[in-house]
Image (cartoon, rainbow, N blue to C red; front, side, top):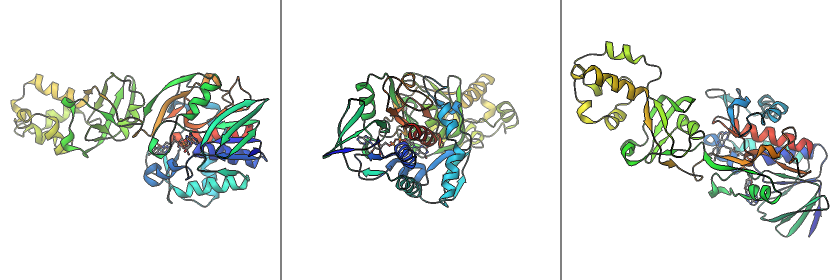
Length: 389
Ligand code: FDA
């Protein structure tokens, strides 16, 4: 059956719902199509069920992209404060957890309900559980075969996300559409993802042990947050953050005691105490037992040569690791890379060479840090496309 509207939005996730609501509230007739039966599953599972919906410190430097300037316009047109105002207008409470990260007081479903209500205000038509068989462009119209219907519109907003968490519906359709229309793609990779370690560095026996204060670095990029030992390697916020910058084959370096002046610490430590007990003041005992060999751990500090003390300080300050890989798209919070921003107008998110075709959210080569930055990109990019489509 053929249907006509003004704007077709593919993907009813964070960016797609925002785009659909914005376009609908401008009076555009919008259809929102998704193959999943449930709306915005990633919002539902985000932030441990509380949705870390934005960050007070959003700024362009918190995003990775081949063009670091690309995100500026959208982030300026629709800021974190705009989204906070929307949340508050629905009577939802929020709180800052740490580092500017804002979480919902209610369950993350409240954010989905809010976006759904915004779409309803814009009289958006829904087509959930609807597979998209193909997209064509004929006579200035985009034609989308979706389930039993064929939708036609002068604007198409692609908001189908990245490849992360295929188990809840992620597909590469957005990249396929970009390719079909001749847009360049930046190679994708899992990001904000646990890292795996080779057998010689694994501490699997203490999986679950957290190091509350660490600095993870890769090249010049550093993040100071907690790290977590896992069965296969490392996770935790510092590791997830640095994973977005890590390249296969490369190193990461962990400072295990950033707050501590190690020279002073060792100078004032009890000379008779065993090394393991001395380090127990800095790090969880279980970690030390797995991380340091027994011979070193059980020696009194006074038996260590100055060279050995220096080596210990160096290992605490710079634990150098060469991950064997990442946990992949199944565990990645986001996908790095995607539709090349060179192909898009940063003010509108429209493809420069294909009038009426827009890409928003994670499908675009803009990847935020951990901490609400990715949702803010979805809201901002979705909003500007909705204003222009
Ligand atoms: P999103 O993935 O949300 O939506 C894409 C939609 O397209 C989906 O509904 C999907 O079903 C649909 N789709 C895909 N293929 C299709 C096809 N072939 N046909 C039709 N529809 C199709 N970020 C943050 O800022 N704060 C947080 O707290 C978290 N927490 C978090 C936890 C976990 C576990 C994950 C996996 C991710 C996060 N994120 C996050 C990241 C955040 O979820 C992500 O950046 C946004 O959801 C991206 O929004 P999009 O709308 O671009 O894609």
